[in-house]
Length: 422
Image (tube, rainbow, N blue to C red; front, side):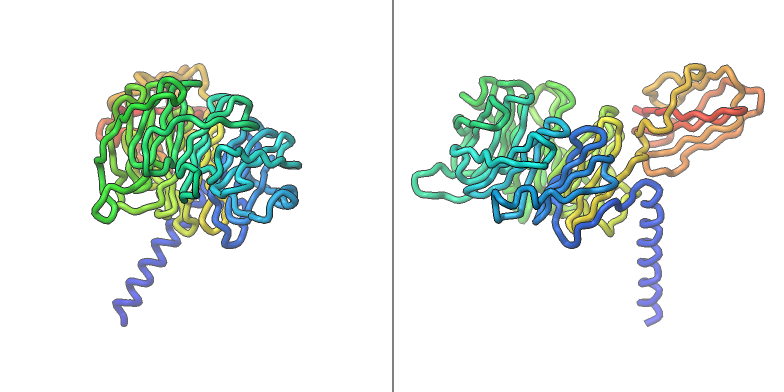
């Protein structure tokens, strides 16, 4: 009995510590009781939309406060489950789901009014939608066979989703779950494997093989999301927490399994402009995080496991927002790579940056103390130079590769700089 109590105390202590540590970065900004949130996305730095089970809502202050938009669409459909969304700007966007009818809705006034633009060529619903620009987009869908209707479909729009045309399938017998296009004509579609086209879907080339980790002894797990930094470097995410990386425009892919047992439910991969990334999904409580452009991943210890993450989005100014399986919205406005408070004063310089370990710091003012903090807020290095010193070397060669924050304190000034270890 005593041992059981001791174990319980230890577990509660760990959870309390994680929650307290989480509060340093994350906060619960909204709760919709027990409603799964399937997707959340910044339309701009302050406008956010979210969809889910009986859930359609909007924030205009960066995610802190939310407005229910479900009443605005109630006359168009009785089905209140929405699977995904795509917004071009704060006012114009699409929400969609995998149903036979009423599967695509458009708003041009920020969700005040909606129109049903369900395309007849997507009769079995939409699983994934990707736009190259405001006009050209691609959609994949299909699950169940209906008489005389293809089981899986890929379609293309050139008018922002108002009308669609069917294009050729690269495979037969499986259902495409994800689509991503780099240009009007170069793109990818995937079920269990990735196919590439360079002619807007007229022809396709298989670019992967069944490899990586297995689920229940087989490779039958699907790709669910893509992210590309540019036309050469990108990632494809698999349901079983496999990440496929390409450096040659998707002609070849290298699989990498996240450090977790193979489970289903991996859904979203996103990065900000500083190569800081998140991966979330239904099968895991905390998100994975990368500070080196997706080369390595670890669990984000600053995020509380009390709020299982299902979807994630990053704003241009590095705010991170997460939707959960219980209908909570988690917001991190002060991530390690946030521009808030990171005012790089021109009188200070750090070099080389990126670095392999040793960096040099020069200022025109004396340095009183410096501190190096990792992405979860842990102080990795601390020093208090003599008051008249304005140049010093900092040895970080024993620390893991990734992104760090260098905090510099001087006589009457404080600044923070980003440091990358390669």
